[in-house]
Amino acid sequence: MRKQWKILLGFILVLLIVIFALSNSQEVPVNFLVNKIYLSLVLVIIGSALIGALVVLLTSGATLFQQRKEIKQLKETIHSYETDNEKKLEEDKASFKREQENEIAVMKANYETLLKEKDQALAEKENTLTEKRDASPIDYYD
Image (cartoon, rainbow, N blue to C red; front, side, top):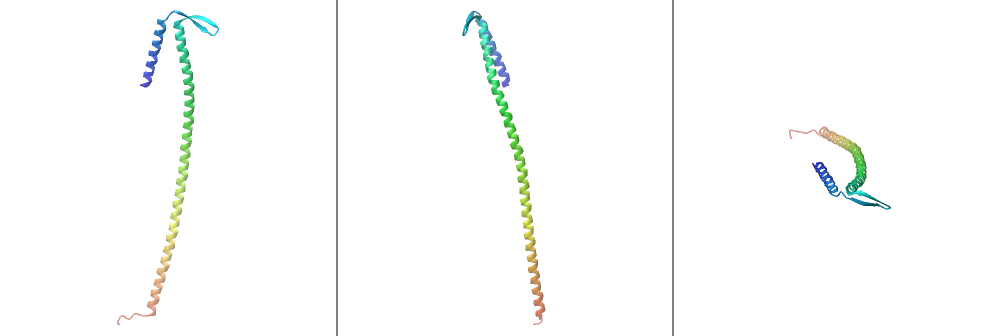
């Protein structure tokens, strides 16, 4: 919708310039530094408008070209950051997974050691109890 308004405004401005130029049809002298030429004011007005439009087109075209080039570079930079971030994320995931696996392995090893220690302590207590039973028989009739 905004583009349509710009086109409509452009047509209205061109129409105003043409009407203004046609209402001033007398001949006027135009000085080109050294030469003096007599031209119709219509040609001077329309020529000036065309030269102004050309200057605007060239300056905005250069700016537009620079902006497109910058946008392309920024998109490439964003893409490289995204790929770098994805790689870093994968590396961090792998590192975290390795750390977790190492922690699990350490915990399992500690668990196994504690379990063996408890089994040994239990076996020692059972041995002590069996030795006590064997050493002094219990008299149930006392």
